[in-house]
Image 1 (cartoon, rainbow, N blue to C red):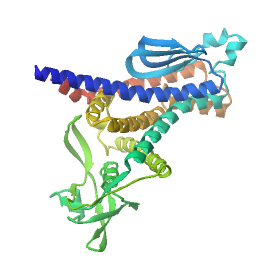
Image 2 (image 1 turned 90 degrees about the vertical axis):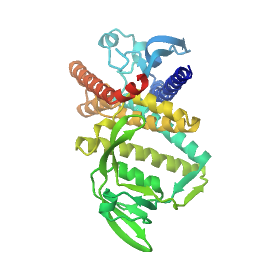
Image 3 (image 1 turned 120 degrees about the vertical axis):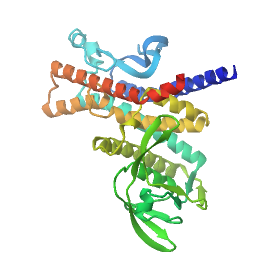
Image 4 (image 1 turned 45 degrees about the vertical axis):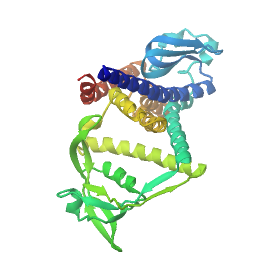
Length: 379
């Protein structure tokens, strides 16, 4: 009975944390679209968190239906002349509009206004992340752990590169290393690439070449995964420092943290295309749910940090130039701006179908990677 109750409690924690994390991220993404659309005079028919049948909703004074649906895997803002939740244009609606309705049409607005509305969603995600990170940094300050090498594993890239216990890492590829987290961040985004480490060894500065190696290991969330390692442990004598941070510096650090997530994600996809990263790190809603549940056990502040990270990731993903995503719409608008006329309805329809196929394939592949998590849940 105790085991059953524990399993039920764990399932509830995972579900509640997942719905909370994804709903916050989706709400602010769609709120970005919504606010700029209103500013541009676009009539919004619906603002939905989730897909499918409505659980709860209401109409505001502008006629927008605010709704919560039963499937919490995203959301959408639907404009007056949209044919679907993906904001594809409805030709019939455009042809049969009155003059008053045409003034509130999204697809009849100038191309710069449509682009602004579409870009506002991902931008809102980045702003949300910066607000969360800066608030966390202002509240808790900055803690750094001295990047001093402890044990060096036998046969590891660090040993092959000449690293020794007691080395202080000063720079990697010319980037100053403030703490051990900086070292971990750079190593994790440069698999199978030679990195120049500038280290201090007993007062003498040396340059070492270390090549992070993709190594398979057991991950408590995803099962067996491959990640880049160099084979060092932090020194038990490494000093830690804590300092309070003012609001202005907190924002600067938050912007830098957001930028690191963006560059790290883009670097991952580049390395994935080159075969230098493992595709088993790609995950979908199941992995987000598992991570959310695990992080929620550590408290509300870590959960907020996770919201910031996922918000950046979703904002960036939506900017990929894939039809159906925000980036695909922006690509169409860029072509329209150059041609001075929109693409034909047929071309856009084909583009959206291709985009849908790509998104479905990515979701299928991510779900395959998440099967070990499902196995852990049920068995």
